[in-house]
View 1 (spheres, helix red, strand yellow):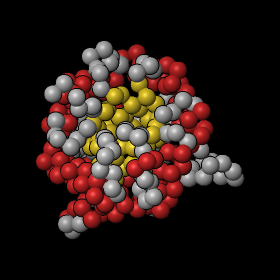
View 2 (spheres, protein in one colour):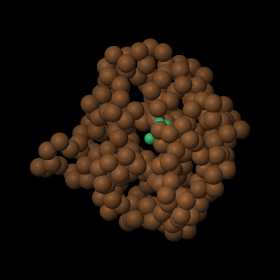
View 3 (cartoon, rainbow, N blue to C red):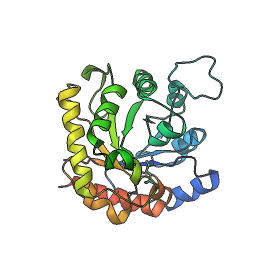
View 4 (cartoon, protein in one colour):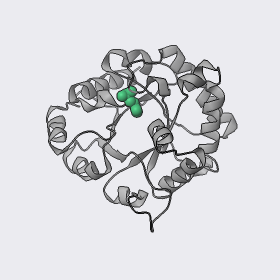
Length: 253
Ligand code: PGA
């Protein structure tokens, strides 16, 4: 069976009241896929306590250091203590708005894995890079540098996931076509196998960028797409429920 993931990235959205109504309206009764959400760090414990037990809760970022004088930062260990099971690392908003480079992201990946958090490592090209025809080389270097020195022995199946999120598709309503997304996912699969030597590992590959119930099926049924990382649509319980049920129905194929 092809396992599918619907991962919600709530970014800096939702408050306690909207979280309450989200879970009142969420319906996962038709879902058997993996359902994961990353809220703001301060809301992690609320979700851990109040969301369905099948839902995994994660962070959106961690500090690269284990502990110490890093005012304002959140450690991987603190996320884990709150009940988080995973963390996004390298989201394009972290890369562009907070100047996180591949070297820093690599330290964060090591930190998260060593604390027992699963990692969703995000990669993707800008519109300018796509237009220049350098999409594959950009993604290859994000993977090779961001995942440097992570040996296959360090990752069990599905402890490390990759999200391909073309920057031009994030929050824009402009989604990659299933063919465009599949081509890059296939490229990522090969890069992991042959450049990182992770041939034997199952690494789930998620697509992200303007995924909605109306366009999800065409993307999720592609051979190398194992799920979606969803921003805007994951804030609405009805859309999230619908996405989870679409993903679950594709698992049976
Ligand atoms: P979007 O965001 O679904 O709103 O495009 C995706 C993301 O940023 O992970």
